[in-house]
Image 1 (cartoon, rainbow, N blue to C red):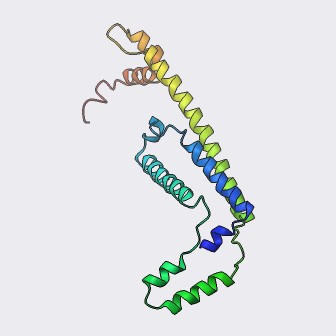
Image 2 (cartoon, rainbow, N blue to C red):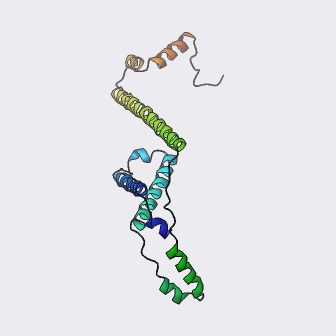
Image 3 (cartoon, rainbow, N blue to C red):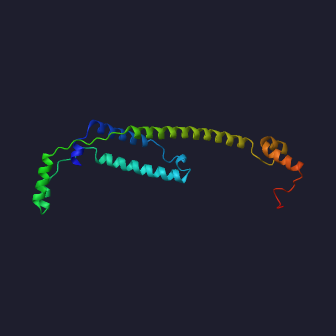
Length: 181
């Protein structure tokens, strides 16, 4: 692992930088917002995501610097089999493994892009629902039922209920909703 950290490529460093920038942006998210607490499932997912980002931050901090050299001398003092440590030291000094690089496959990129587009579509739908709900709440507040509201006012505000009541009166269904038949 230490060799891998020493031989990081520039693309890996760029990826690490991108993760750090994303983590910094996440610090600006207002996690206490009611939108994250409205649903138990969403709240659970947000908590898991926050834990994951905290773990990623901790790992980024831990592995941000190149590792120090291995102290084989102290290992030789603390291990009974010194020949084993010497062979590991010899192997370590003679090997130069290639740097590990990760290439994001086109299929994965397409799948993630599709997930992002689906999320954007869901966001647009949710925003539309929020706007509709806010309009409905404003309407209900302006047409609040009080003792001063007349039957005519109620018929204007709730035309579907007024129609149902008129139909019940015409059909002489006086106690339809109150008594069992």
